[in-house]
Image (tube, rainbow, N blue to C red; front, side):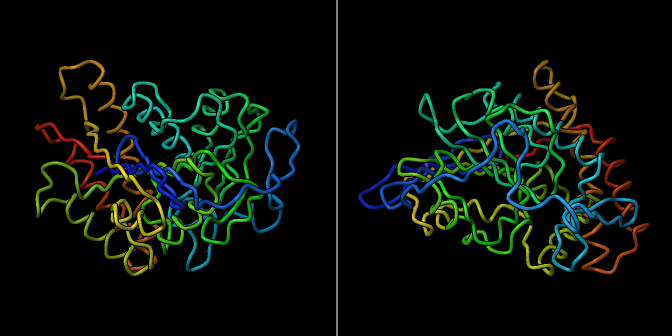
Amino acid sequence: MSALPGARPGPSQPSVDPDGAGPSNQVDAGDSAMAETEPETSDRNSGVTSTKSLVGSVLDYPIENSRRYCGSGPDSYYMPNDEIEQTRLNIVHQVYLLLLHGQLTRAPLASEPQRILDVGTGTGEWAIAMAETYPDADVTGTDLSAIQPDAVPSNVFFEIDDAEEEWTFGQSFDLVHLRNLSGAFQSWPAIYGECFRHLRPGGFLEVIDFDHAETSRLVPDSYLAIYVAAIREAAERSGRRWGIAHLKRGMIEEAGFVDVQRTVMNIPIGTGSADPSQKTLGKLWLICTLEVLEAASLRLLTRELGWTAHDVRDLCREVREELAKERTELFTPV
């Protein structure tokens, strides 16, 4: 499912006006947002910059069950960062472009935004595209993994950063963007609080997410249903819930945002649609769905539920075969 909150500032209150594809929330920060301070210094000619050194443990990525991850501790992020996952992330970016008819965001930004933040930027595709669209804006992308390209526009900066730690940006933003981060954080209220504090008055927060449990025609005894239930239980045990509860209006408003808006859009799974554009969208999303099965479950189920890697991959294979045999039109609300 998707939720998009949007807001207009009230007196001494930030506002939210999210609009996006898939489950997304957009927030417009109002008068009570933190005052702007001196911006961080960075070398605009360096292409990629970081607030942390890209040496030592930051780039010491462990291999588990033939997949590479950004950390090895008990609380380390559950999604891999290897080339297979990077390819999937790039395809996901194309899916959202098709879903939004070429738009990168549905936030009603000013014609010349100054600063944009992409939390959990992944391969940086969205941040790079925003930097190209708004060449006079400084676009910052943060992530736990240094998997972004070196050749980027001079106005985009990548930082290795943990969003669950205190944010130390020396400037406020016109837009804070988060996409597909279900299960990434222990406390979404804390994340929303940081977003609120780092948005300028009148700025926007856009959050986009989905939950495979919301996939149409999810049969209770199907392999997909078994997969979703296992992921939910493992994520719950890890302390980072999986799903889209963080898109609820009340949670966003509690952070101080107002005028929260929610938008739900459906992404088809597969090529069953007669519409050529929907068929292309469905084909790409099917690829993403099949590839994310192992990526999202392998570390969670082995670490939290004690499954073997063989058992996880066997379940993923059953789900893939089940989806391949599906003859009715499926879609994921986002």
